[in-house]
Image 1 (cartoon, rainbow, N blue to C red):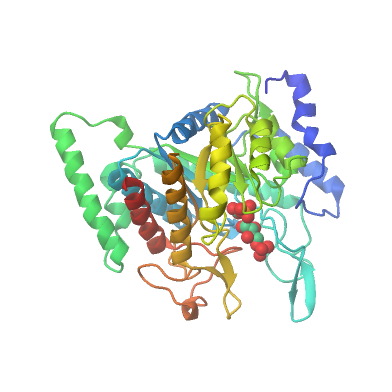
Image 2: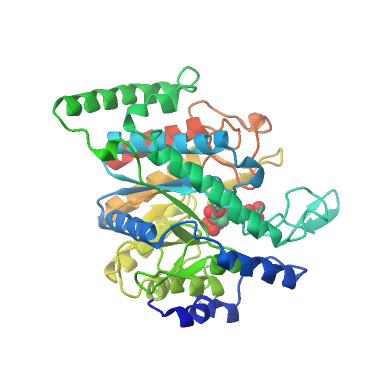
Length: 449
Ligand SMILES: O=C[C@H](O)[C@H](O)COP(=O)(O)O
Ligand SMILES: C=C(OP(=O)(O)O)C(=O)O
């Protein structure tokens, strides 16, 4: 949408008159206003031109020419903004991307759930422990995870901390991805601490040797393109807290369009994608590429209505549908959606989130997911698209670079009894590094097949 600077405020805030689900109940609205008006004056975290570039990359995904790898924490946490944590996540994504690019021979668009993924929609407004009920933890951008009444009060100061944590993360990500660390000649270095202990690390090492040989061959032929020395990497998060997202929405001086400069891509979650709600109105007002989570209750009519609202011009790259049906339902629920959307002429990118439809609570009380279910949902996703002749455009996964024990199964099998060992997520269970690499190898096989 093109606007002039004067009217941008009213358009960026048109969502304010609409019902907004999952917003914090701030006790002090004056304090909220003070923080958001400061945020309005802060520098953008990303540039509109970068968001446009990602939009062009996602258009390739929608057209069947590239594959999206989108992944990162379920919930980032302020106390985990450290070089080690950020490097570990990036390393995992780079390794997965190397596997997919080389083994599936497809360009991979790399997008982190990173530098802004601090807000969580919750199923229940309260959490009860030993008979005591407190407001649910909604991500570090809202309240604290500690189970005390004080920590659970929504505090607008946390929005400012989210901005700074995102800026620091993005700064390091930019350094790593353009400053030599992501050079393809580092394929072995990304695996260094991993190869001896894990089967997936060893499998990766064999693939890295092949990549090395290919690079040497190309160099000997005189080809050493710039693309091998840095990577394009983009940041995304759920646009959940509309006060924050709106405060970071600006008019692009080049085009007069509105962009949410808190991240390159934002998505609207399964719990906030109401057609007449504030989140969809907000997403419709910005020009970033946007995603929408599509869960098992989505009807083809709803999917088409979402396209009308968010992608009225039917431009490839603008809209990504991130499906999260559950392994046992995807084969039944996805085909009618894909068929109707394809028949409508829309060019959405279809991406599979195999995490959110497969969560269960173990007897120990840990929320977990079975690696086999995750894999089966991705398999179902590929089967459906193969059957319909459409493009399985990518995966969207919750993962970490650390050796956590949050999801069960995988090559280095984690048992239900192991979950307590390193269960560190702030919200939902993530694949660890070994499980993430296992998944990348299996997805590469499916893609090739
Ligand atoms: O990550 C997604 C949601 O925030 C999460 O699944 C909600 O979890 P809950 O059902 O425990 O609230
Ligand atoms: C909340 C999330 O997912 P969904 O909206 O699909 O439940 C998420 O991806 O963090």
